[in-house]
Every structure is written in structure tokens, then in C-alpha cells.
Length: 152
Image 1 (cartoon, rainbow, N blue to C red):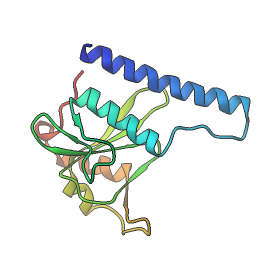
Image 2 (cartoon, rainbow, N blue to C red):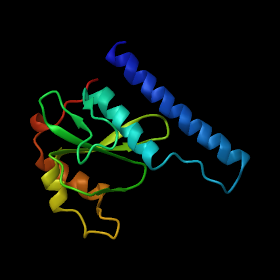
Image 3 (spheres, rainbow, N blue to C red):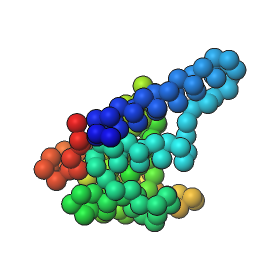
């Protein structure tokens, strides 16, 4: 299967998940069926693998989720809200915001150390939060040539 076909298929399936979620919310007002937690993380990993040509590690690997074609170790974070949390400093960090139409926006693509230095205090759950706004503010510090290349 070609990269474009895989990318289109992944986007279509994510869009279908959100459409089903919306349909259930209309059938049962006041209830929420938004994909979250592990599902969003896995969706982000699937998108990252498809669009950035990353080799995914087995689920729940420590610190890093994938390896880039150039050998960099990558932690992939996906969210639907306006922040993420880190439990350790990755070599490289790729943060994606998932949209209900099956698309995503790249919020940060840069060194894990730069993001880690700007995270908030350690929370009781062992994670340090950072807002997408802060990550977008840091992004210009990462030269385009150093970022993971997105396959179109």
C-alpha cells in the first residue's frame, strides 16, 4: 500500500471514530463519547508512523515510542486539548493535536530537552505538564532542517 493510501485510510478511520462519537452524543444527550486516554495516544502514534515514516516500538515502551529514519528516538504525544504531560525527557518530541475531521496539526517537533526545560512542576502522577501554547512558542527555536520530515 502506498504512503498516500495509508495516510488517507488512517485519516478516514479517525474521522469515522469522531463521527460515531458525535452520533452517540446526539442519541444520549449529556453523555460524552470522545476518544481519550490510550486511544488518543495510539491514534497519535499511528498518524506519526504514517506521516513521518517512523518505526513504532512495542506499546508501552519506556520514554520513546518510535525511531526516526535517521535513528533519533522519538516520543509521540497526541492530545485533543491544549496541553500534554511528560514523565521523562525524550531525545526528540513530536506533539500532535488530533482534530475531529481525522486530521491533525503538528504542535511541536523538536528536542525533548527544550520542552522538558519548560515543563511545569512534577505532579502527583509523576508527570510534568506543558501547554501547547508554550510548545508553539518554543518551535521557532528548532531549525526546519532538524525537524522530523513529514511525508506529504
